[in-house]
Length: 285
Image (cartoon, rainbow, N blue to C red):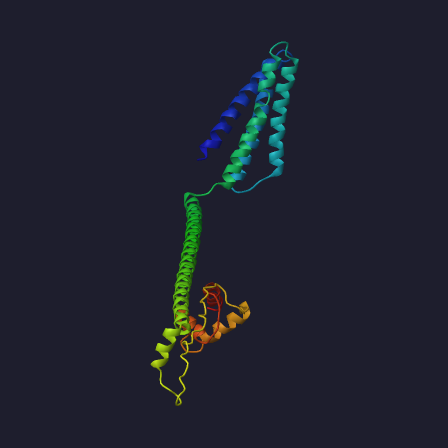
């Protein structure tokens, strides 16, 4: 994996050193003997390489020296300055020389990137552990989302069933009330009729002599409708409901289950919706 960063840095360093040496020899060779110009070019490149080697040695030991880094960048700036000056004083191809004058600085930047890569690199075991942790977190999040969706669907189904049951009971009560109303009307008509009244009176027992008791209609009162409301009035507060549920739950040892607690809660005459009762159970249990 280090080859991804070290190979470009090595290639850029080699190109910049060759270019610097060639420019110094061509540029200064006209003003001084070429061996001297060659020594100057090798000195710049040598200082560049020496500081780079020392920086790499310190990096391998996990250390860093700002002075050495500063000297290395100074040699890079000197090489860049030589190339820029040569490009500006060249009689031709000035743009081409300026285009390659940034190579020493680019080489130093690539070595900086390579050093950062090394300081942040992780072993395959660490990378595998990180991937495992991330995958575990994704799995837990997916399971939590699925559990929430399942609970929402279950609650929706339960509410739909309760609503449908309430509607069926209401229809049965309405039909029963209608049937009883028709029967009561029929009995009233029979009682008020002359012939039917005498016929019914003849079959009743006389309470006193010469007195015929009046035939009375059977007592029929209004039916009390059963309302399938999600909340009965007056409603208990959450705190009162929690306390009541906790008291019923711990009325026996071991503690009662939710179903046993709900049965005793209803039997005691308390009123609360199934949703609130189950929420109170979760809070106290």
